Amino acid sequence: MKRREHHTQATVSQIFKIFIACGLSLSCCEISQAVEKKTYTKTPFAAFSSQMPDALLGSDKYEKPIWNLHNALKLPEWLSVSLEQRTRYESMGGSFKANSRGGDQQIPLQTTLWLEAHLNSFRIGTEFMDARALDSDKASIVNNTMVNTLDFLQGYAAWSDQNVFFSGIGAEVIAGRQTLNLGSRRLVARNVFRNTINSFTGVKLRLLDYGHWQFNGFVTAPVNRLPNNPTADLENNQVFDRENTNTWFSGGFLELYDLGWNINNEIYLYHLDEGTSNSIPTRNRRYFTPGTRLFIKPAKAAFDFQLETIGQFGTVESSAIANSKNLNHTAWYQHADIGYTIDMQWTPRFAFEYDYASGDKNPNDNQDQRFDSLYGARRFEFGPTGIYGAFSRSNINSPGVSLKAAPRSDVQLSISQRIFWLAQATDCWGGSICNKTDLQDKTGRSGNNIGQQLDLSARWDFNSSLNFESGYTHLFKGSFAKDAPLAPAPVDVNYFYVQSMFRF
Image (tube, rainbow, N blue to C red; front, side, top):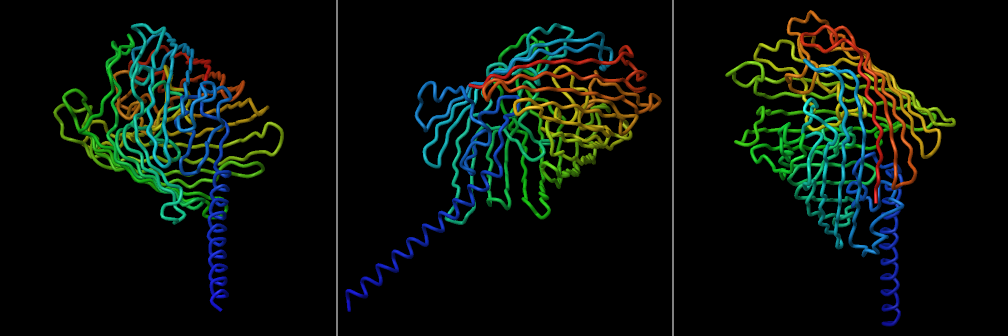
């Protein structure tokens, strides 16, 4: 009898072990499906190796370079190494800046070396970056969006667990200097076209319920790119970047997947509390920026859409009124697009797009309504930046159309046409702050028609390690761009670039 009881207990124990094993297998299967659903193939045309691995999804989000240092040097599995180099030539004829003449040209070089060591759930990594601009002269506008010579872009320690306490939820914590890339990238982005990249020092927490939701929360101090001096940037001088410890940028970002009809939702809130130090002047921006985005990802033979609404409120120091108190800041931004991908050769996707970013109604009152895009990217909607960078998410009213196609798996083509008006005719045409080089007519008599922009680009991937891209942008000037005070010659602007990307 005792032997039978012992045998029965052993059998129950075996069944229990099998049940646990099957449960773990099912969990891994679900994670595998989530990985497959979120796999991408084409890496952005910029230094991006540090963004390829995903500690929670358990695989690379992008195709591994066919030529890579890890295999060439026969490095151990616990060490990841990547070298990336981008060379671009860009040329611009004509101008749209106040009191400017003629065109400009530049050769921006971007080189990064990324190393990461990982042991079980822990990782430690660094990314060293050199961004410089050649072939510029004293008449060129050179700043720290183009130059950041020999500096550390990232230096971090991280911990991750794909299944915390067997809850089915993955968690990741990253501490140190790091880059952020969230949502639509309109407010927080790891820059792609721009020669320099935003980075932040602090802590980020990521929680992932596979296939259902994801949350990112962070508290950071933005890293100031130095030197912030046109003469020093023109000469590609080297000064190590540092954080302004009087400034804090924090936020929470919640993503909800597949709510029905393939609709996804993002809800977020960012807070920027900007203080001034002796060496790093600021505008003392204290903004709360809430927003939400609904979207369906593009798919063959299907409609897709995107709807993002962003508010912004707080206070900001005036740049127009001497010895004034901080201004009350209230601004908003709206994006909408709808597209359709045709199921045929080239898989063309046609889309209608619209963007509105509020401007300041009265530059001389105690209110500021000019929308500030914080640390966002803009090339994917408003054309190239670099020495061009004509448009940003401030004081614009802009509808447009776009067409993207892939004649072959290694070739991508795009064309877009947009019309731009000022949201407020008395406010300037420029970035989140009006500079001396931005056109403005405080009387509003020059109207609000900036003009139209035609943007073309083509990319060819020789393989996953070597890519080429070229583009052309033409700005057809409208009445404001021609007639505003201090406007340059009323001729259209032509911008051209060609670039290569080597990833090893």
